[in-house]
Image (cartoon, rainbow, N blue to C red):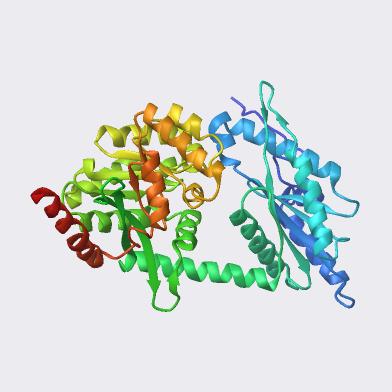
Length: 452
């Protein structure tokens, strides 16, 4: 039998080149087209280096779209983004699909920072309108990084690296941010990278420390537990605030390693405390989005030999809201094992009452913002009263945070608050100082009460 012959139409050199420079999904140019366009501009302006700008736009939280609605829905949104961008970029500008959910621009007539920011604001508005997926609408935001030739780089590769640095800073600051590269921003990013490496090394070398702040019964000033707080004193960097290094660990994706180290150290230290004292430990929003968190925590407790019934995990409302379904499962698994759950910073979120209804907590911590003004601001006093009354009705324990003086403690006790913590009762201290504190403030007081 004679084999069938298939004839293919010849593909011209121009067609091949067009294919090599085109993104097959959106029809936009690709990163090769962006590179050539930027290089051509730099050659044209070499003798008289008039500035031009390149930029990168990254769709915020695009991955969940694919996870929730499927890859086809994600591709449809990318095509709609491309259509909007082609329709609104200025004459002479080039828009390309840079990579995945990133799009790039070459802007010959944008010469300085203000112009780049205005362009970014315009594109941000264009991309914020709902995307039609047939049976549903989806909203997205975008973050931007811009770099201006020749100040941010004379070669394309350097210019692109600067734009990526600016974009990274935007992503660190939150959704929908716009950053134009500068030397100051480069230094800021360099410091962040150095800090990240030092923190990773500190975790590996086990030099991250845990301090403990006492939580007391307001009725008799007797210690009932301690909150574990992360501390890092680097040989080169000095003291680094947890408000700096904990969010950094979350951003860079190694909060699990940091938290596991801290929990292990805290639980080991707490083994030497009286068994009736509990250990309170903070969970991050990233951990409440990880289905493996509960098993990881219970495994650490098992290895250390620490009773789960002595552990309280503090979570914030913001953390719970980040991934409610996953957080609900994690909380349920931990409570089933005997771990108690405390809602931290209560009253500062946008829907705390809803969280109390939807989740099962054992304790609520009143934020220090209300405690610090309880004797000077009637509104704060009434808010604290309302929280206490509500928690009593829901059978929730309450801890007041940030008690700084005797007057605040007396006021909270008179309102019926059961527990408190703050500098008035003790500053965070390392494990050795905590044991000393226990001997001075727990064993002796407990003994006096037993003999009374």
